[in-house]
Image 1 (tube, rainbow, N blue to C red):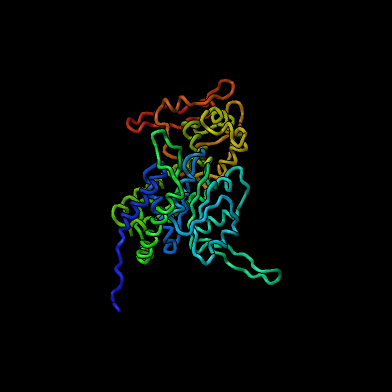
Image 2 (cartoon, helix red, strand yellow):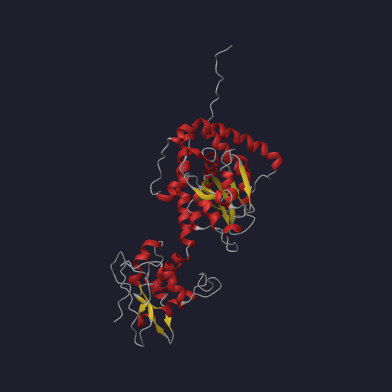
Length: 417
């Protein structure tokens, strides 16, 4: 008998990821190049999640149907291990699926907006599964057995999860996810027609090669501590660490492409979070379109200004106009520089002492939560000066803050006496 071991044919990890990316490009139009990089790395990471402390979710979201979200899941299904596609699942069923002896599944949630969207009922158990399963030590404590013979048992939830849906997701899920904001194809954007019976074998052949490559780099990846791009820390670093570890193991141009994609998609997610937060939108509008240099404003004036903004949500906030009560509730979640909740205070005017808000109380929240200011000129500041009922301008009821031009140190407008 021969003592020769069978020859192990090397697998070029970078070339393999190139093929995975190219396979997606045949059927998917993603909104940015970074998305192709992220999705290819995510496919590969699903074969290696036992090596990581966390497994990022990947979410394909869009404002309208027909944007290619479900197709993205269909291609991922071909390339990942033990895929399970669902549009409706119970948390208990998923916990048992993850604990099955066949191995960890790749769970693909389509139409996830029916679970978390505005028309969906609360499902804290399912949300808990998605949140807890993001970390290896996540799980659920359940009683099993009958009657007095019940015992406590921990059900694991750690598995790879991809999602597709309309709108957005709860913040607790979004921050654990790589977000791909899908959009409808433009007339000049074309993809290959997908036919499962034709393309399934091609995808599965690629999946099997990914699995073989994953087995060969498993030990290397288990000990990896990938260097994060500058500025990527905390939860985004947890999300991207497995993907960067895969890129480093693959080599070639993937380590550089992965870090560029990380920076781009993390920045995009942060911008989306700022825009989706009604509180941040309120703070930004108050600074850029309402106060505009004034050091205090009555609540009535603030509401009048906000409701005049055509592109803003304040005239139709949960089917109602913004009120003084809602304004107070939204601002109360932020604090003043003195670390007290922002609340309305009395403002002395020539005709009384109405309740209102002071710029000094909002200053810390503006600095911490808002993007850079939009207003940089005297024209912008003065043109937005709101009018109080009776023809009285804000300048008559509140003292503007003294602004100075950065280059000439010339006051943009003087303090009203």
